Length: 150
Image (cartoon, rainbow, N blue to C red; front, top):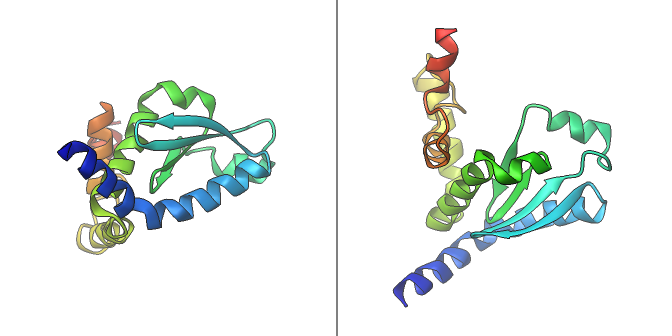
């Protein structure tokens, strides 16, 4: 019972952020650019429809596999629904359910702190929220270190 209560609190806590994610994803879905994939865990999942989306949108997704806004997850293609990307994005959903409206604020502040205070680090790749999501998905955690080895 306690777990259900915590889950309900998480949904409520994430709701303001999820609202904006729903506005965005539902609008693109209505335009035919995103396809509804379904509910996966705590995420409401859409997928970019590469055949229907305008070229400018497909271009924006070129180097991006997915993103989460509250409980809303959008993936850059159907291939990402069965790989580590979905698990990664669902970890971001979990983060918002824990931190609510503070998650995007703390995420941005973390990036700014890295940019200003750690010039040898990458603000996105070394962001603790991204490291946490990559760890949950079994992805490479030290992406910057891997790149420097090449």
